[in-house]
Image (cartoon, rainbow, N blue to C red; front, side, top):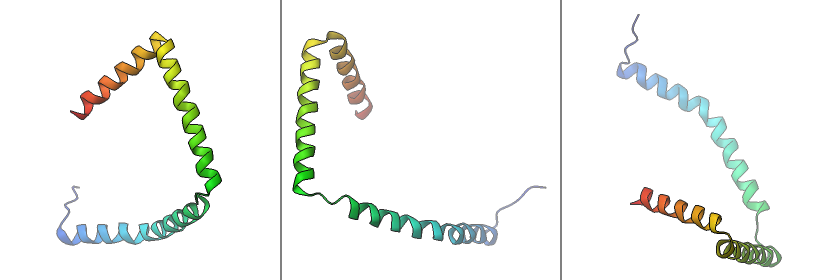
Length: 86
């Protein structure tokens, strides 16, 4: 037996899927609001993140200059990325 989706059946299927997914979307909104409240950026968090970024940046620059294998790997990854975006 082959099922044929007529406009009526399709509309019923879409309505059923939407009805079943609504409670999930409501919960998703609550999760997003809770996360945004927890992630408020205080001056201490901002300073901490900046210090962490600078430390990681300096480490990566030093490693790029000192390790030829790492440099080749980074250059290859960059070329691949540029190729994908062109």
